[in-house]
Image (cartoon, rainbow, N blue to C red; front, side, top):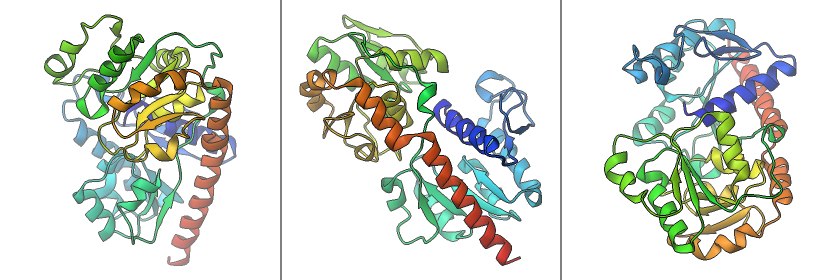
Amino acid sequence: MGESVEALVWTLSEELVARGHEVTLFATADSRSSARVQSIYPRGYEHDDSVWDWSLAEALHAAQAFFRAEEFDVLHLHSDRGLASATVARAAVVHTAHVEMGAELIGALRRHQRIHVVAPSEHQAEALAGRTNVSVIPHGVDVDRFPFQPDAGDHLLFLGRMIPDKGPVEAIEVARATGVPLVLAGPPDDDFDARIAPHLDAPRIEYVGRVLPRERDRLLSEAAALLYPIQYPEPFGLVVIEAIACGTPVLATAVGAVPELIEPGLTGYLAPTAAELTGLVGAALGLDRARVRARARERFGMPAMVDAHEALYERVSAARRSVT
């Protein structure tokens, strides 16, 4: 899972524990959680050189939960690496589809109708049109955990993996066209030196590499706006709501679920292409940052997300009990 998804799972499990639920979190042993953490790996694969096949490691880790399925009312899976185990689990199973679903995943979910799917957006749910047990629950964040800067810096921010699909080169082109400084943060990919690095020698363009969560949140809160020139149809885009939780408006391409997240003229602006975002930078910088943060709380606050999951867990566990 990416760091934003990990933060989402942490937020959900922490609030469920606070509400009195017994939660077991199957995660690496270095995870910090109020839930009961169960592990077979001491650290995440990105911090453990001995784990070279991360996909297998993730599948084996997820399988531990399903081996003990009868201990739980509901098993909630946040990675498709565990779907093979989920198909035979003796418990109610919920799967959140955090990534764009390919034909294989869609086919598997259509074959195994007993798995209840959570789609974070209507865009994601459309891929499973006709499937009855799909719930749309937008991701949520604990807005109070994000810093707020009423007076932003004078720079734009790109935050994400340095891959073409995320649009880092497009973000650089927007910054160069407007003359506004740009900070880019995120882990480099295998093609970084060939595809991205040659564009970083432009004036007022700074690449700071991969950042830890606290630094990420600081960068989000201090930016004048987040550039999100996404090039492929993501099912959600957690960094978008993390930015507006900081009061930082977002300039994004209208691709995938993004139009469901941004309210033009209120929390940011949308354009059909990254090049067309250039003319919207000035307007975005003039948005009321306090109002941006307030809308994040109203639309994507953590309580509503947890309420929806709580109701779903009760519904699927009751349905499971009725047939056993």
